[in-house]
Length: 572
Image 1 (cartoon, rainbow, N blue to C red):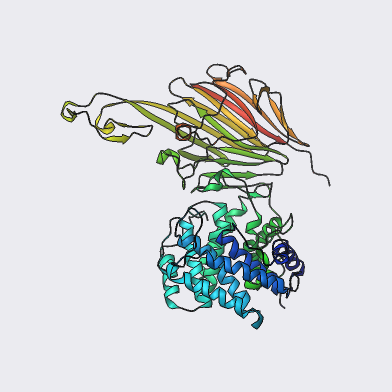
Image 2 (cartoon, helix red, strand yellow):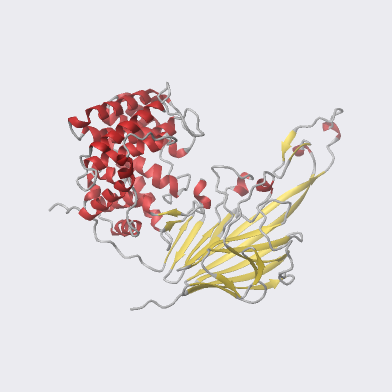
């Protein structure tokens, strides 16, 4: 017996498309000034989906067609003589143009399936796609996900305008192997790029090329993402190597992928995720077009499987652990690329947050540790060990040097030595040729994850330096029991503090095991977050915002910090 259709899902998708498409159709001749080429193509696709949908207010609307024509003229005008599109910071970019061509090709399928009334629209879309085809066939990329976006564009071009050269080129990119690791994370470890680029691209390629291995990769990524869904309906990003490592990313962009694979595989855990992604309503205007292009999306979801608590997951490749219970959802992270690469760079995992916790409305967004050691920046673990179930040790040793005079045979009369970077700064001093006096500093953080939070044991060894632990709480409450410092900052000393939001709270208590007492609220030079010279040399920072609670002191020092969630018992 065929699976029944989910008419309410389709109606919701139509309403979402109408919210974007209806204002455009109301002013069909208005020129879309300032709209980038990707936005133009997406508008065309959404308008055509609304035109074709019986559930849309624009079904069969001549004004919708007129708005499509206006946008197509603007899109063709943005196309250069190479067929690539102008605009954005990536000049003559095949992958950036591929995003647009993917929508153009989808729009072509929608228009071609509508009948003779859209013959001119279909022809205009074919002209735009054809003009871009040559450059996409030979063009290159500069990020991992670009390979799959570009390959998807080649496959879509072939779908509408068959040409074996297009498939051969897509297969050439795919022959490099999909960059998914043993834990199910893509190499960029980015929720944004998994949800918006890699997963949809691989699903399309799996369909056009008949590649079940690509479908399997998407399923593996979605299965791993289940353990990264946070109680606030977002996906964990602290381990990302892209822009979202410092952002909060919602679950709803994953909706079509969880929904499609839940329907095709019968997975109840994917059905649960799909429902959660749509819990606040459907507001993605692209979903309506996807119901035409992938009709399986319109089928009813299988019964969801309830989430099992407590649960825990350790992603060894990203060095990220998550433990979820009915009381707290806690994340421990030690997978930064910075200790190995010794630089802050786009494409590296740089976020120094090593712990965060969710307790209903009370959220501890970030725990970070600064040390004033040669301005080398906050603690970022170079190693993360799993000591036992839900017990981890994060370690980082920083080493720098003072340099001795050059050996006699390496001296130059003109004093013109090589300009080199020694990991902390650059100078014309031929650093590798000099004897060195090394100075080292080690930080170890042991984390014991509990049902109601975490116990931390922080050991800072090496020469005496000031340090500060920063706990950033999400706005919505106020620390009680800490000393206000002004500007959203508080100082925690020997007594406990509580951060309460609604009926939920997070309690923090610190104690010194070895070393001098904690710094008092008058120690402004200690109680601060220092992003390190890689940021400050260009006037930048990666500092958090929110309610920031500090405790600090001078190493060597060992202390314990207990972080506990308290929430009211659920009502029956």
